Image 1 (cartoon, rainbow, N blue to C red):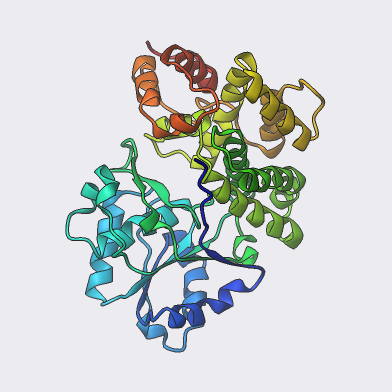
Image 2: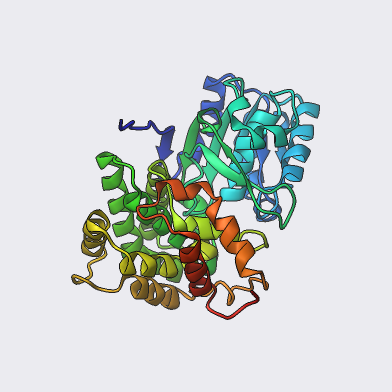
Amino acid sequence: MTILPSFPSVHFDFGAIQALPGILSERGVKRPLFITDTGLVEHGIADNLVSAFASPGDVTIFDGIPPNPTIGGIEAAAEVYKAAGCDGIVALGGGSVMDSGKALRVAVTHPEPIVEYLKDPGKITANVAPYITVPTTSGTGAEITFGGGIHPEPGAHQLGIRSPHVKPDLAICDPDLTVTLPPKLTAATGMDAFGHCVEGYLSNNINPPTEAIALDGITRVLAYIDRATADGNDREARWHMMMAALQGGMAIYMGLGPIHTLGHIFADCDLHHGALITASAPAVMRFYADNPDDGLSERLARLRDVMNLPARADIAQTIIDINTRLGLSSSIRELGYPDRNLDDLADAAMKVHFNATAPRKPTRDDYEIIITDALGQAFST
């Protein structure tokens, strides 16, 4: 049976962030905790938002969220939340901050250590703290999704937090907050959105409305990512890239696949998620092209249409060309991924939940080939 999901409410446009104080007031949040990272504090973005409140002293800022979310970061934020008597959470930042907020809203209202809810998300109840997301990048889609990856410690493989109860209450998507994003991050996060839309569209779930959203998101990324990367002040490009990121978040509700499986297993070191996703994509698309069935062939043909490619064009090579043009890598090794054992990586890939919605699930032998391809260099066996 097909179940069409509902997404959180979204306030979207330039200047949308100005509505935040009123939105919190409507929800009865009087002492919010802003979680963010040190960069957004150093650049004054967090302080500028807080100054818009009638009583800035009632707002607490925690800037200790690391580049990849960790249990330690969440536990530290929970201590600040409780000590300050906070009654709601605002996540200001990229995917790491917004995924941390999903776990934090559980940690401050549930009795057991947060790791217990990562191991068994079924224990999460509706008793969670109010939660609003404010993305400052255009890529992860985490502002509206109901799951995320949390590392037990830096460099360890992720544990998932996945529950309808962690889905944000509301997202405020203001493209103005992305204009200072550096070109490399603009490109990497934008191609992350592309990956979400592609894998959501190709998934084995049936959801025509969300499939249409995913295809439209692909079109937006390809039309505007070069402009946004070349000129961060191109407001039209920034608007469309933030919309594409939101559409990518909606596509995630369809389920993901081997591209994100690779992103998951390669996330055991401190590399940017979006860069991992776009570097992994060509290897997976080659696997699909070499192993199509009727249904997958039809979807790949539609994908080529949306990408404005001729019939039977090489989608993998097209993605490599885009990465090259944007200054991104199509080799995981080139990103700086350390030497790992192939057997261990293939074993880890087979255990990732993203495989469940892949249009063609790789076997373990398939994953050895895909991983070798994605890495782009020989490594230990």
